[in-house]
Image 1 (cartoon, rainbow, N blue to C red):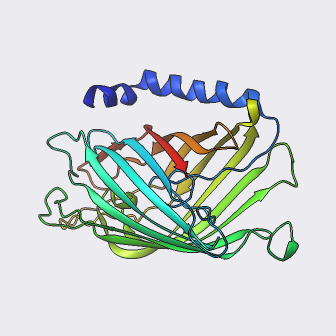
Image 2: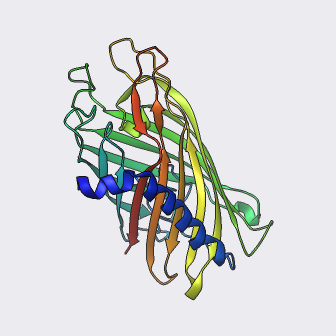
Length: 303
């Protein structure tokens, strides 16, 4: 695993990866399609932020489950993470699920060393294009609860990363600009006490943070779908260190591409680059998270 991860961390690999994304996406700007996938923590979403859509289900019952696996090469400070998720839709408006996050390959002096569990739920309160309109976005509310990680942040014995996100999100696929290349717009507000989705531990207080995404939807060969875009998520400025450290956690950014090989199968393949933070200390003593240009992969399948 460490050899595998070190390749991802190299600047040469990251430059080649960015070039491959561009070469792969640009030739296929043809017809439009929409695809959904599970995000890193389990909700139907982009890579790390939720969409207002829910996992497929009939109007009066449970849908078939969707499952996913994600890998984040987080670097030598926060370590590497694997997530396995299962999400279930209900009555076309609801979803709930569970994710197991496994921390792997961390250096002995890494700040975070434990695994944790994630439970999530979401309800769409306004469906997209409600009232036979073409401009109303889908609007949903949801929550994400993280628990079972009782490892210590460096210098703070027993700090738990039990935390929660409560959010509202609006999503719209815009076809009025170009029917051949629809644009996916996503924006939301979350209340959270988690730093870097819990990967960085807890924030000192509960705060309101914004998030959003912009993506372009292309049709590739054999009716496949390619979605390329970016997302941003504000983070709480502080991490609860207990040592009075003055930190400045920046807004996290993800640049990603999603490939849906066929409309006949609910298979989604994701690849992205995460920019989470470098030196986050506002004092003379630096604290470098070394979490810039970190590569992540994901795969989702709906039964």
